[in-house]
Length: 200
Image (cartoon, rainbow, N blue to C red; front, side):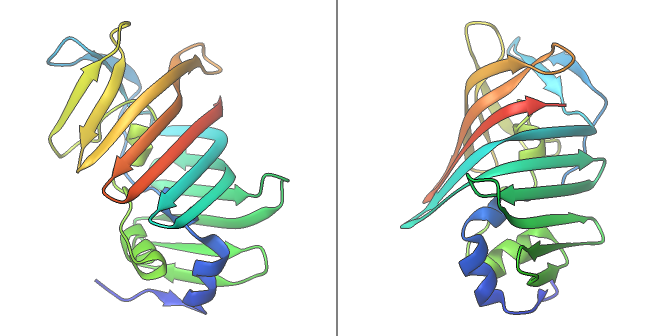
């Protein structure tokens, strides 16, 4: 794996904290709903979506909170992070050709993939291969998973790649389709909380 190309990676850590953990790159399929092996309604991840909301991340003694706006189009992702007061913290974007970020004060970094960027900047790996599916209430393709249904037949708990994703609430998007609106993601020593305020 090629080493990240960056200007002041230590400054990146101070500026972004745990923010890099929400960068995602994964392939998606055609929209729809399929019946899981256990009779659970599993939505097919959408190839294109936009989500806005709030996130918090904790790793050991580190903690971070921000608003986010996430645009996912095919294999390209763009994530804008802002403070609770609306000030931009950083914009992170990338696709299969590479990933990069630019902080509000102009600092930049780049790497071949999200894993390289987050491991170099934070010292720990985040679920870059799955979150664009998990945030939609679906497992990512390519690795085993287990899922527990809620009373309505929708996923309540999803386990994949060592992560446990708990879906706390669903809400309708612009097309009236119910999508996850609150969830937690846990991995040893890592906890993420997401609240999606708007789906498009």
